[in-house]
Length: 248
Image 1: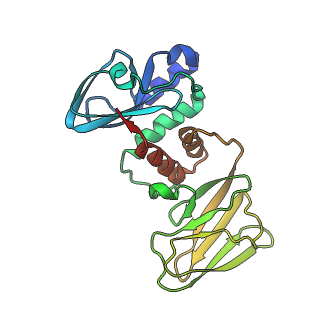
Image 2: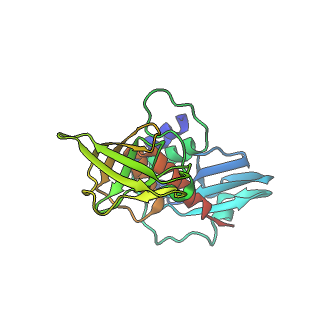
Image 3: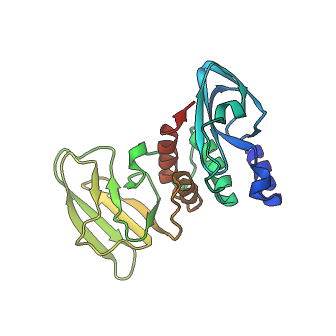
């Protein structure tokens, strides 16, 4: 994490244009000599083993993957792949994205109460999981509940909102389905604490968070979700973006 602190210091002292005029960041590294989070200049030499790869990202959130074997500069990887038209990502989100890239590449042990326990499947970033404690939603969005084990038979879904009086919502979760969209006849989802349970399973607490900002860039959105404590969603969205990176 030390190198992330160094990056954050640079971001505070210099303007985005000056810092990133000819630099990029490593956000995924496998069998390559540069670690995730490292800032590289255009002339930085990069060596990748035969079975390895590296993903570089500009300050605007543009990403390029280079598979090994490879030995050359960062410019060699980015040449012809990056457009200068995109807007530089806001400094705070960029720093959060680099931290997200680092923690997403590691298996971590969580102690006590945590923001999110297990990374979801890449296509479940908009779902409330049985392992998530914070869920970020945009205004007017219908949350989607998700379970990794589809019930064999129809099961009751009970959702309680911790207010006064306690709001109790009920519906039926269909057999064989992994997801269930917030029913249209339920009161709109609001920011706050909810507790939900499926069938006889244990109850799960979730805190719904309304996102005031709505970045168009998927990586910026992942960074914002991470800052708001929705780590499961952030990791899932980040991994989904990585899976779509163009290979050089």
